[in-house]
Length: 437
Ligand SMILES: Cc1cc2nc3c(=O)[nH]c(=O)nc-3n(C[C@H](O)[C@H](O)[C@H](O)COP(=O)(O)OP(=O)(O)OC[C@H]3O[C@@H](n4cnc5c(N)ncnc54)[C@H](O)[C@@H]3O)c2cc1C
View 1 (spheres, rainbow, N blue to C red):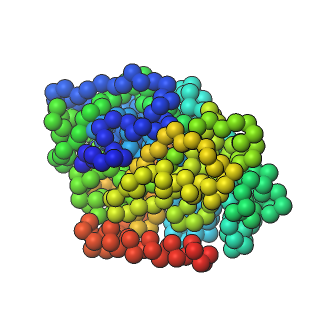
View 2: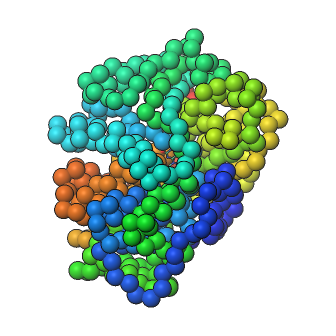
View 3: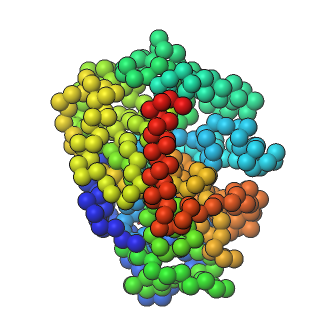
C-alpha cells in the first residue's frame, strides 16, 4: 500500500535524517524476471538486516523496497537504540514465563545480542552514522522508580555486560534538567544513532556482498509454491525463499499480517542547533531519554546539537495537522527553558504494533517467512528478528522456533474494528498514565 498524506510521499520525509543523509546515490531498479536464493520485501531495518545476515551466510539475495531504502519507520524514528527483545526490556522472569525455562534465557540473551549486531556491523563495515553510547530511562513517580530498582536487582543473576545504575532524585538533573522527573536508570550499552545513515550503510554493505537492492519496486503479489514468485509492476522475482517485512507499511499485501499489525503514528521535531549553554541547561550529557508512559515523550540531542523530541501515538490513521504545534507544547512542558527555540524539521511515521507486544517471526507457507511488529522499540530488535529468520533459512531454526511458536492473535474484529478497539485501549492507557497506575 503506497501512502500519500502530509506525512508520507514517495520520497523521504522532510526530516532531520533526510536533510543530513551521507549517501544519496540510491540503489538499482528491478527490470524483467529474475531468480535468487532469497527475495526480501521491504527496505527498512528488518529487510536490510535480513539481507546482510543472509549474504554474510553466502545466499544470493535481492531486496525489493517500494520507495527508498529506510523510507519507512526505520528512517524516521527517534534514533534511540535500546536493547531488549520481546517483552518488557528487563523482565527476565516474564521471559521465562512466556518462553519457558529454556526459551526464556535464550530470548534474554537476544536482548543483549540485538544491540551487539548493530555495534559489530558499524565497526566491521565502517558505517558513518553518529553512533554514541549512554542512555537514560526517566521516572515520573515512585512506582516507576521501584520498577527500575527491581529490574536492576534482577540483572545481577544474568551477567548483564553493561553498566546500569539508578539515578536518585538529587542527581537526576545531572542527566536531564527538568522538574518532570524524580529519578532514572542509566544504561551505558544503549545509545543513539543516525538511523537513516545506519540503514543505508547496512544496505551498501549488503550490496558489496552481492545483494541486489531494488528501490521503487512495489510488491503487489506473492505467489506461493515450491519456488515462490514475487510480483511488481516492473518485473518479478522467483526465489527459494521469500522474507516479508514491511511492518506498519505492509498494507493489505498479507491479510494475516494486516489483521495483526496495527500502524500507529508517532511524531518528532528537530530544533535548530542549540548553543552549548542550552544543552548544558537541558540534556547536558546529550543522552537519549524515554519516560515510562504508554504514549511516552522521547528525546535526545543529535550530533549537530539539535533537540530531537518525539511523542504522541495515533491509531486512527489521522496525523496531527500541525506536528510542530502538537509536539512543541510537550517539549516545553519538559524543558520550558527552550521557549522561543526554532523548529527546523518535523515529521512522523508508522510503528507496527501487535496485540501482545512480542516481535513476530513466522512463516506464511513452507518457504515464505515474515518478521514484523516491534511497536515503538525496533531499531535493535529488527536486527535480531532478521538474524533469527536468516538462521532458519540456513537450516538452524532452534532460536527462531522459540519466537515462531508464540501465538499472535489478530486484533478483535480484524482490520475493520482494530482501530476503534485500539482507540478505546489507548484511552485506557492514557488514563493509566494520567493517574500513575
Ligand atoms: C516516529 C517513530 C519513532 C520511533 N522511535 C524509535 C526509537 O527511538 N527507537 C526504537 O528502537 N524504535 C523506534 N521506532 C520503531 C522503529 O522505527 C521500527 O520498529 C523499525 O524501524 C521497524 O523496521 P521495519 O524494517 O520492520 O519497518 P519499516 O522501517 O517501516 O520498513 C518497512 C518497509 O517496507 C516497505 N514496504 C511495505 N510494503 C511494501 C511492498 N508492498 N513492496 C515493497 N516494499 C514495501 C516500506 O516502504 C518500508 O520502507 C519508532 C518508530 C516511529 C514511527
